[in-house]
Length: 274
Image 1 (tube, rainbow, N blue to C red):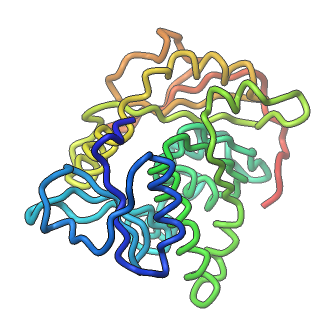
Image 2 (image 1 turned 45 degrees about the vertical axis):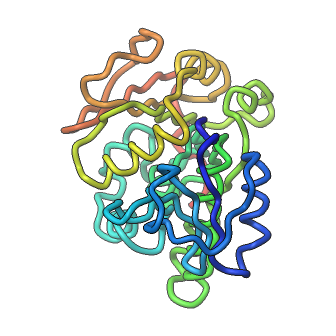
């Protein structure tokens, strides 16, 4: 993680405790009331203000802020108008009528795939080891909860199925016992230039700068295969090589990405509760 030149900026007194906590985690001094557009160094900053927490590139012509967003935007549109259980991710994880696996998302990022799985009825545990990304995701979940209380009861039920843990996936997987095995472990390791859309390019550029690539993806797959009850699902760019050169049991392929499914044993006909 490249945090040597990552400032934490607080623009509202309401956010001061949370901003100070992140700054201390990163070993940085907290900056107050600085406009990201007014500086060019460092290249990225984390901004706390009344709109929430964002990762933002500096400079006047920089793209807009990156936030974890569940109450509006693309993930909300997908919730309302997406393909439901017909989506590839649903088939990859094994969701169908009466089957709602408990999923451990070991590479949560901004939580988009975890949110989709929660909308489908899965309980989802999300692991995120980057303090910056964890802060973005925690803020997005909190804003979604607050929005749901007054505007969207269905969203409240979905977010209630999402649990966020600040943890290194390698360590967490090692701690799993036979009593608390997840049904499915989901992996989406960082990979450069995965898609072509402007929004994805913006997010990936920022994440590569702040988080770096997931260099331990090979060993993460091996541990996941030891700890999942029924299957491990790996999301990959469509033409990317298999993680750890390990051929999956089968694949589901879309236009830009694919799912490599490693089956351990057959799922029961009923699993989980919607």
